[in-house]
Image (cartoon, rainbow, N blue to C red; front, side, top):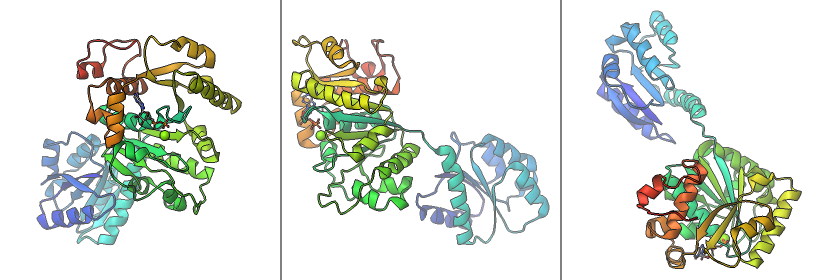
Length: 392
Ligand SMILES: Nc1ncnc2c1ncn2[C@@H]1O[C@H](COP(=O)(O)OP(=O)(O)O)[C@@H](O)[C@H]1O
Ligand SMILES: [Mg+2]
């Protein structure tokens, strides 16, 4: 959380800085001002989470200044540090909307308790409302893991979204290996075994961080079933994840079991990944029949055709007719770029930025974040990549 501190007292400044960095998550003193007047003259571009004011500043007597600052940083929490609790000062502080008043010299425990309350108050307004997107492989090798991991990376880097990918494979989950060389220290089973502890920071601490904005929760990898994974755990994890991430991407794999089913129940959209070949289409049909029997709305299921080559015997229209579902996006067959990326464990957008498959993933980001209508022919990413033409 970012803090603005207003004090002339360098010892107090240092004390709060060190107490702030010791917290989890830390409080960083993003800006320091010597007086209320200076704070008003030099406003911060963004609202800090908390504004800490040393009330020994003589400006505090001018209640207008405090009120003006509080009006400007409306979503911030205000904390006042005073040596003496003058009643009239307290009333003015209350009027200005100051939430916490602490006595100086600072009692560290009281400071942290107050900060806990502030973090909670700010956290509530900071809550995200993430979307859950499930990628499911119609046939082994369709490309669900390749697409979900690389799409997650693309969402985080191109659209600057905060993205969490959860590898839901019961066994042999390998999502982290597609985009990272880090070995996961924690997995989905660890989170489930400590489900009572779950909150945003705990969930984040269990991830393999591919970039600051893109983390992967590795697959359970627990063949002895030492931990009881329960469908209710999925509800809890996804509820917390929605509050802290813009997008939660699920690599569901192929198996449908109690856990993946509960995850799919929670998904906003489901993306079956298939190739334009009869075995894939047969399996896709079985999958869509299951979704129908579960009562999932038809428009929630959006097909992704992978390794698509134009001019093949089977046309997209045939596929849509056969399955009764829309193709949301096609990803071209790009053997060299995909294989290099998978073999090196480096996202294809990083390794081969201008490859056909990387550009297609960028298009998918635009579709999902609705930055561009599908029919528009030149979007931000086209300009970024300097592309002359788009795929039909
Ligand atoms: N668009 C593509 N073009 C070429 N090869 C691809 C493409 N997408 C995936 N692949 C290759 O297919 C292989 C299987 O993909 P994967 O994501 O592991 O499938 P799944 O998770 O559905 O079983 C990967 O090793 C990757 O190299
Ligand atoms: Mg896979």
